[in-house]
Length: 116
Length: 116
Image (cartoon, rainbow over all chains, first blue to last red; front, top):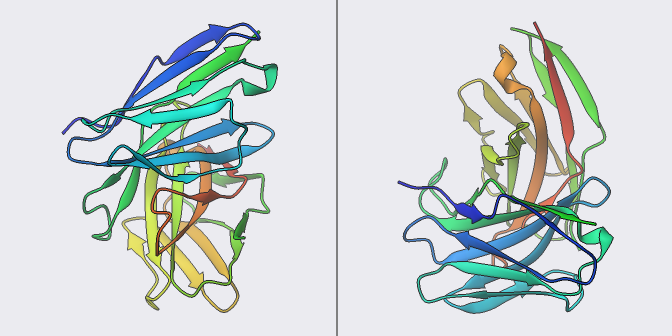
């Protein structure tokens, strides 16, 4: 069973540009969450999508947006990039029986974004 | 709002010995999940162990076990017979049981070094 797939793995952008990151969840998982990881702020929740609808949103500016398609694949977009947006962006899908038989978040390997 | 605190930025352990990582959290909720995730240098977040707050019995997964003290809001991870492959950053995380399914609140992380 394939895991959570994130593309691209690494990318470099300049300030003011925009970027789109993609996440394909585990087959059968309908919920996808996004997280930003930085050395200073740690791991922070961005948003969650379930059945193409945003179900929850973290405390990030409107430059951060996302969407989910009918096949559960999700994209997140960051517009007007700032230096502080440099981070590892992690995607997680939810579902299945996990270790203890209930919903568990499974993470992808992440997309490392560097903004110059 | 819920918070998770890991007070040990770094820990080290000798191979084959036991180490305990600390985590405290704050919540007004009575039902929730607690997790320990491992993030090796490859950056892939891997679920180590989970605990449901309504369960009094501490969770165990092979060499990994937790000490869950609900009243004290404490959730420590014990790693027995430490192996070189256990070297990683460990994150404690909280999730509400109802709604917000994909939203985890993470601690700042503890970097574990395993010495041969």
